[in-house]
Length: 308
Figure 1 (tube, rainbow, N blue to C red):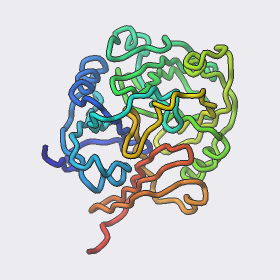
Figure 2: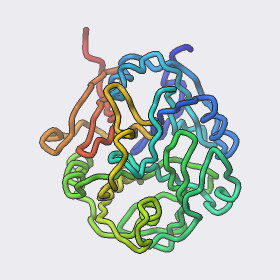
Figure 3: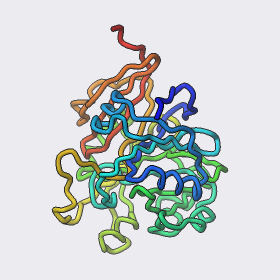
């Protein structure tokens, strides 16, 4: 496969630009998103070595990649093939839990879904606000999607609305053993303290066999571009040792979000972030970060190439 010039692809201008999924079967995942969610394959390429390092996946350099675009032509998903990726539903590990994806009509969209998509919870209004209606779905790579319709403003949050069948990921949802530590890390990255509260998370209660009214400590930290990170403190049930990753393994499903910020904030290491790579292109700087719960971020900031 050839290397795609990023300047030929269209991306969102701010906030969460796109999400990287690890796909055990790239063609099957592309077909599912194309046929059922209406995304198009905008480009195929091979994963470059520098970007693989930013993603914390140096061993995947040269792996097949597909960019999937929404009806507006924006590339919102990057699928990287790894046939050896370990399947494990995201409810049973810390790090990225779900992509919250903005859609026009969640009821109509979910009614048309079939395998390899699996509906975990049917569309319902959220406890946080009846203006937010969502359904939780597992995707073809094992990723969880919160397919979400926003009907009206929900202050204090600045949330987008859309009339597109599928628009974009506007919230990255993560599971952490410590909400306060994760909130502090994301507050340092976003330069905003966010909000802390408690709410029920029915899809987790279902997965763990808990009372559906059980509540979790949650935080929300606003990001640019009408986007957010949601931080859910989730005590994990005891898992089978066979599900634990060994050296060189990775989970299938959601791997990283790409977030554009105007500059690299100071004090990230002290706030709990680990920087794993820093790559300069002609116009941008791509920094690989891992948060305190294991979540991966590809931070995109303005910056000129370092002179050789």
